[in-house]
Length: 153
Image 1: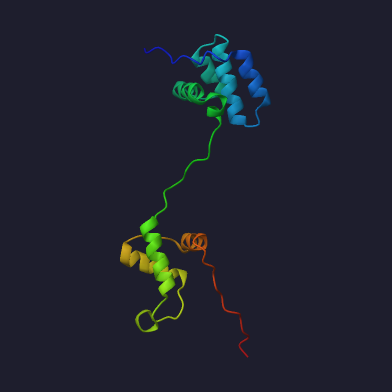
Image 2: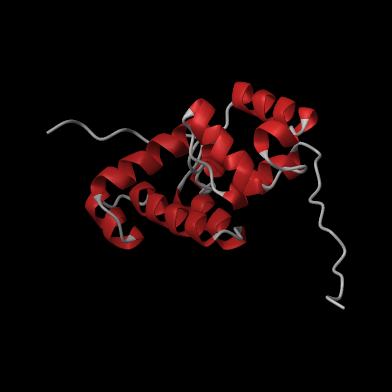
């Protein structure tokens, strides 16, 4: 079995418990307390049980702590999926919106989100929902236009 990754020497168990007491992030507190158990002479298995995780996760915590200190134990937000509309597709979408539809060719006088999504799928083979397309257009500085409702009479 491989030797465990050693912890930094500039902290000790009491310092980590004090940091855990002042921390406002519950995940960081749990990780700091688990690492303080290792500093206090406990095994990695005991630290894993204290943190409610496996040994590999404790090893990851040790690596993050060694690299960035206590700040490395703060859990960040997951990055999420990459955008389907890269810079080239956004430029093409911007050109399409700026040009506007041709009534003879497109059969309409104003773009709808469903029409733009369909054109993106036909021309660039990218499927984008209307909600996502609306969010992208809004971030590009465009606003949704809606006609003022009229009474039928």
